[in-house]
Length: 331
Image 1 (cartoon, helix red, strand yellow):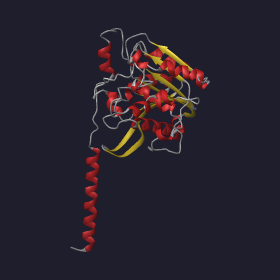
Image 2 (cartoon, helix red, strand yellow):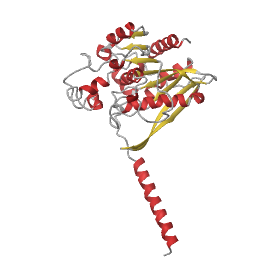
Image 3 (cartoon, one colour):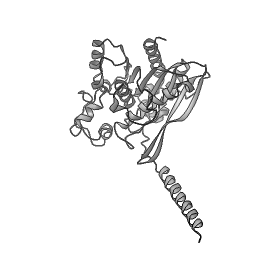
Image 4 (cartoon, one colour):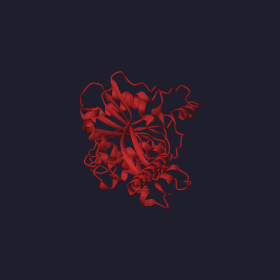
């Protein structure tokens, strides 16, 4: 066997081994909790509210939709190289539009970006670019990975502002339930280097200019939020890596209220009839008023936590968001 042949054979062999390793890496499936879906919540909520309806996922005539756009690729995770995606909805008319990045709920362990699409489509038809973002759930990565993901998505939005008609000076963030907690935390940590991560487009800012929180935790340590008898399989315990007794510093670190300051941005709160989901909100609003920062709060007096998923509450929710963004962005 000639030396040339041997070298060629070895090169091919190593290439095949590398391809096989990459193939095996890509085939590793991330565990998923599929319990929090719009249909599952509809079945649950409609028992007490039979009048509700699921809104249709219909792209408005004046809106472009870009589905499953990759905003970053995570390298060498336990599940291999991992793309994170976003659904972008942008007005067809050329221009620069205020933009809303939208974070889904599901207890940090379930749900997906499709839950935000009906609201995103309605807002895009009103003249916003809306970005429904995927992030790593607790089965894949614990706190603060999701914060790093979302900050990366915001940087990607600015890096691609011209492509999607994004006004880089008018970017807000909204979130529902667990997504609301994340939206608050991302928004209240503008300029905090420890919360940036290193997941792409580091030359761009991840700062946002306004926050919308739909029934998301304001303070994990508020009496109504902090159940000291939490079980080990509770989603907050799993996501934060331990109980409050075990990880008090992390519970505080993940509580948005402790990051609020004189330079914080305006916040809109939209609440359900469950007080525990907005524990600490009054205290945060009081702090913001002392600093002269605009806040707004609305409440649907119904015992429906994921109200934003259903008619008759989705349209007034969208209208609250639109009115708030007009105020803070001076449209």
